[in-house]
Length: 340
Ligand SMILES: Cc1cc2nc3c(=O)[nH]c(=O)nc-3n(C[C@H](O)[C@H](O)[C@H](O)COP(=O)(O)O)c2cc1C
Image 1 (cartoon, helix red, strand yellow):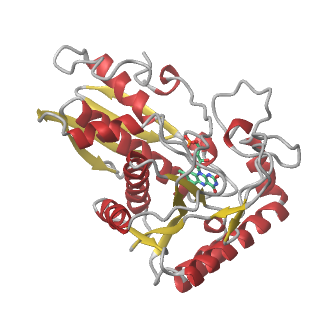
Image 2: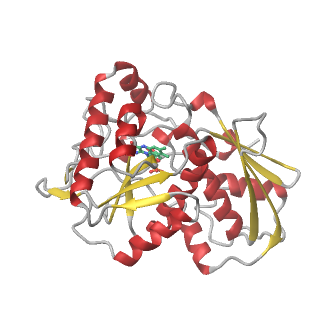
């Protein structure tokens, strides 16, 4: 069953079996963003609960030795599970890192109470399969202040802070410079570059994970300030062909820093939930996001950002928000591979 092709309301919570509900939740969870589309998760169900476990066979050993990005990815999947439960009219009860003896067990989710989903929750659910990471510039359109304030509020509801630099071009430029430094450092480090290349297969690949050439432009788009994208094509010229118009410098959009005040595993899971909450709410307003974690994978640069660009809070994600017609195509492993 692919819930994203089924008409809304195709699954009726009152008559659905526990197995059907679990598949529904897993199908929503796998649509979450994950670093390099590693999809580093496993889901288990039974006894009226659904759990998310980080699959550290899919962890980036070089770029993410602590598993921070893996946990952010799992946190984003957890947020999708919560939204899917609300869509079905259940009230999710979540325990993050419920068992100290099982450090990879990200969360256990149960539900016993029923409250009909609000329209707003249904709308969020509708974005789960539509949202895609953007890799390029944005239209020269200002995002309304009210939307930016709302997005800040959404992050705060998940114990994270979203700093948006719409009115701070100097700081936005500094963030762009650190992203560039991070990307350069990454390209010069052969172990990092090889690891990234392993998760960026070519156009003939039938893989259902990794960042495929359908997800990024063949010619990197120039933005102002200049934000550098990861080199997923690693010199092969892969990627989506440019449009017919002359290459132009496009807007970088509104630059954001998602931070947490502490930097423990639970904070990474919160950051993942906050990220996905912000992305889905933005998507309801046709606002897309580009993500840049290159500098956050390099401890010195992450520290630099923390000390100089986000008031000593711990940066968990650098992002840009804006509108665009372009839509990347991404892949996912089927539910049968990840649900036990
Ligand atoms: C922790 C994390 C770090 C990420 N870092 C980057 C990044 O540096 N550059 C990028 O283009 N996308 C980044 N992404 C986005 C993933 O590549 C993307 O989610 C994945 O390829 C799946 O595609 P989708 O988001 O379009 O569904 C990141 C996502 C997460 C969760």
